[in-house]
Length: 307
Image (tube, rainbow, N blue to C red; front, side, top):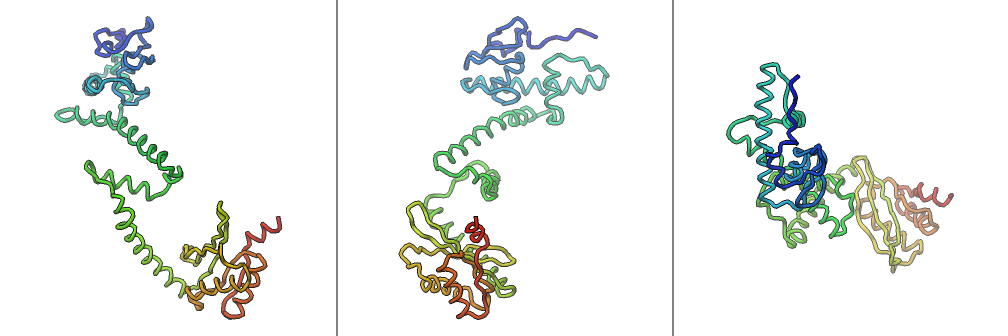
């Protein structure tokens, strides 16, 4: 077998203008810009300078003109490797030098057609990884500086929003403060009300359950949330600030009765509340007035009381 030429030892390679050989085998190169030592030879070092993030950390100090120049070199090498691979495949000879074999093996299955425009196409592909990294970092910074919970990235609406921005392309102008606070908020409220009408139709067909959930915030304010459950799903109905409301059974009954009236007695099968004494008494009063529904203690609250 013919001896292979080690591309990393070629001192004429443009990469050596920006790096320093730190071992006799030329497998470690010191970057003149960030002072980091890159293992893997001159080819891997050029990936470092081009910031392709391809098996190597990108250089944060490389000048933009050097970065673009090295990218162009990598693109030309990639196209040359593709042409040589085809020629060798046709001749049946698989001997190749190190750099071309490394390029060919890593980019197999992701090649672009040679010819006019292929250099720019491949250049865009190499730049894409770097652009994505910068974009993700900016999105993360937005989360950090706005104190947005990290689990919001799991929200399908977040993914959809980014996809639509990408579909719009360059020049997208984000919504203004007024748009978020007024215009689109009103549109979302209108849309929510339309969806609520679909649930109301389901309540008339199958009936529903009203569920109350009382809690106290860090400032000791008492809030009672009301939700409505049906085979179609559970929706949030409203919240009532009960901080200044007497916790007597009569007051709790009035609150529950108002919610039943809002939903429609004919649509309510049961009302689920905590098992506290005032709620239990209010539930009895509600069943005396509304003969067609039942008061049901919350199973989770019962278990909490047992434990």
